[in-house]
Image (cartoon, rainbow, N blue to C red):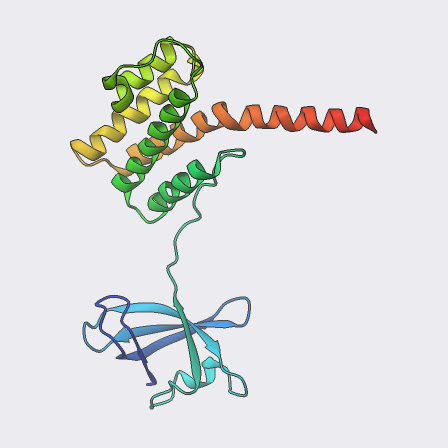
Length: 222
């Protein structure tokens, strides 16, 4: 069989010889090799690219020789389910956190996903608190603890009552992931659903209404 020299994606061995156990193609100019490390004997799938003026990687994978000079090695392929997209009009900083949480779910990192969704709630509540109009300022406990901060925001009508139950679910379940018993796949999916609903209520619906108003103004102007 053919073999390649590449850093092992599993044990981290530098420039380790890998046996080419299989080859496949997918749409586009790239191919995939199924490589097995000769140090740890674990396998990984790599993107393999055809070199200029060389045959396709399919032609080389059955060779009984080193083929480093015959193909180009791309990135490790990590197949995973599609992650849930962030709701429209979510602010960029929150989108970054949501995308990370959704990707954690796609690879089965349930507790990490829950921590990301709790982080969104924490950041939303801090932003709302800091943007609050002048009035009695929140005390130290409210500023630094999520539960009293949420209570203060809802009591002062700085968060819509419609999301109060959702916010409480996110806070309680994610706290369990951080401090108590590890959470399951169902827990993480529930938190993701709650977070989507909260972001849509806070940002997506108002954003769509603004878009509609802008389109109406443009039509009236025209």
